[in-house]
Image (cartoon, rainbow, N blue to C red):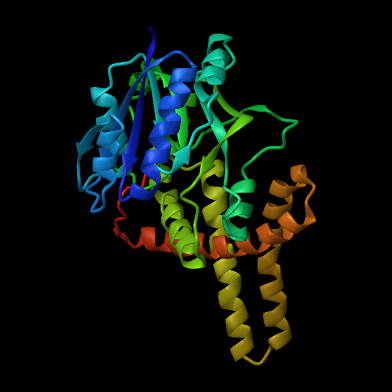
Length: 322
């Protein structure tokens, strides 16, 4: 019987890990695969590790490591030809492995990931933010430049070929790994024929903003590891332009030119509008466009703050949630 090793990094995910492990095992059974569940715990203080063991997972307790190192430690003890990486708050569908292994066998892809949706109880901002990356049903398969590690499937040889995850990155390790895989010749495929559910959605504005500030801190690290390129520079540079316009607007206001200040503030909303239209056009949903417009405006300001903090060698560390 063919086998698969599923690596799951975790930090204080007791409320989600049982659902994640049950769905992963169920998907492996549906595909006729022997399943090896490996949970790499980053020093949880809840019952997550005990729950994982009850589901038959091998649990490695490794506090103090960054997310890429956790994934690498799990892959290092994996014994299967197939490697899957999923987050601890993701519920995979029953046909996850059946469909993706078929796509790989047909030569359509080497590294594959499913689109994510949020459960119906997620707040509007979490749902809208997740929908921005989802593709309509009419576009079930898409070759992409990078994939997130909320769920990844590949043969072990591809993982070993590029040397695994970068262990120095606080975040963005998924983008960095899959960019290297693409450079090594792997075909990356995003799949929307079935979707995974993201149960670790942001329940509050504070949580959403905190996560985005943390995520945006990866830009400078990616530039250092991959070199300057328009693809990596365009978003942080755009966010810095927005910050500059905000500063000029405040200066104009204090100098007694409120109309100039208002004009500059309006200009700062245009990049967010362009991003929202580009991401929502395929959904043909005006309400989604308006939601994303506001979210992108906030995100651009957070990205500028994160980039400046990175330049100032801000080293705040966040545990690896998985």
